[in-house]
Image 1 (cartoon, rainbow, N blue to C red):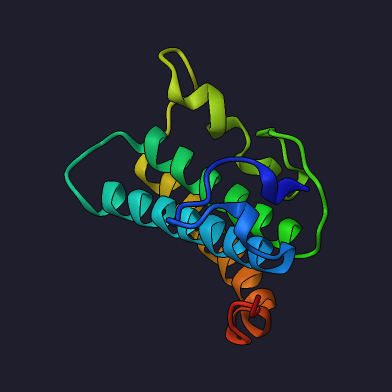
Image 2 (spheres, rainbow, N blue to C red):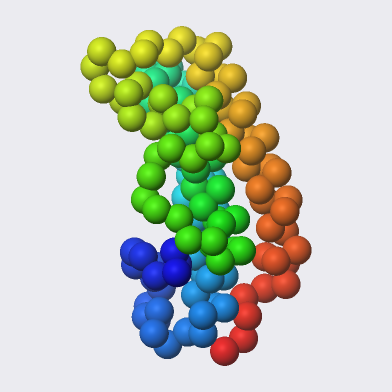
Length: 139
């Protein structure tokens, strides 16, 4: 299952939790990471930094991580990839824009990428709200 990758992020190990608890924990961890990427993009765009390529990268990552949260919620396995169809218009910024010689990104374009990421996150989060509001399953 996709939720078996990485570290639990808690003192307890995954082996002491039920599969439902592990899934819930992974969903919340992926959403937290998506929120962090949104905040990072927002800070870059609102601040004095002009690394808009980095803001676009964080926007792309926010969408990808939010989508991974919903895939985990529905027990859909996924490969470690940066080419999710749902965020195809942002995929370029996952890799190429981070390196010298990649596509240049100006502030208006980075702001548009952030808007796409915010809306995507809002939709994903809205679909997960009933699941999250029910709380972490009991063991």
